[in-house]
Image (cartoon, rainbow, N blue to C red; front, side, top):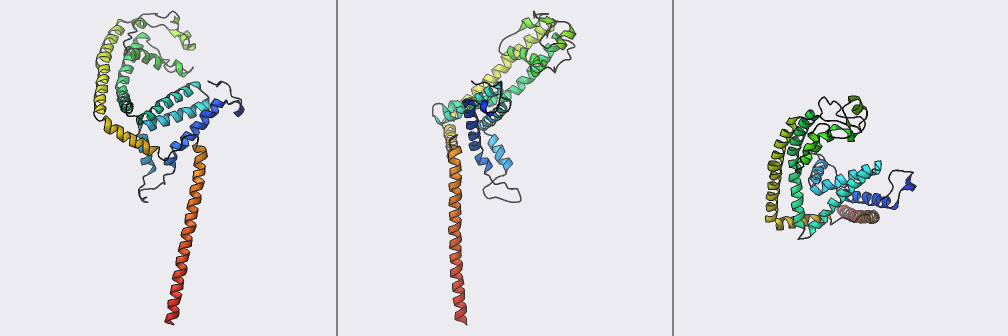
Length: 317
């Protein structure tokens, strides 16, 4: 929504950018306030009711929504440092996904959000298996379409790396797009077979060679990916849906309690930038008064004790 290509100092920042920066900074302070105020302790020095920093960090990152927070903050910091519209868009997307956490409080949508979260976990775990299939088939495609292609990591930029070419065809074949026209020789109108041209100019695509084995590999790969792997994911989703649906009321009450306890001591951003310092000053003032009152009580007790001891001493004399 604003101009990001040029930066002429702080005065060039638009109001929208300042709103994003202030809100992100305030939200980060409020999010990590609890972690920052935990006293550090070691195994030899026990702290009653406390845990180590490493334990708190692992417990924090165990929550799916906290991971989204960390990712959105990292992307926002990178976007601010590089003023990249791509990173701003990605950070905005993660913030929108993080907003689904608010819907957990509703009884109708809360269990549905939990189902989506659990399904996403299953999908990310399954993506490791799928990635192995895509890389294996993609290398087979690329080795037969572009033999003796040694320029895999082009120095002109990340967008020219051949890994994207290797993954693109098997990835879209998962959704039923065969892309068999790319297996035909010289399928591109703007391509060259001159090695010097496509090595020196990354914008010029190299002409691929036809091999009948590509169609056979594509047929077996689409058979496995569409009939086996995709249906396996659907079966995992069905199992997760039934499992969450059976315990939806218990899960909803547990998550609702966790959200209420998490936001019990929070102040909405960016109001926390004003209220939190006042609260800290007030807390320090209360503690100092308690210390003074405690000190006065101790001194009064000492005076009474001294008077009693002196009177006993005089009596003995």
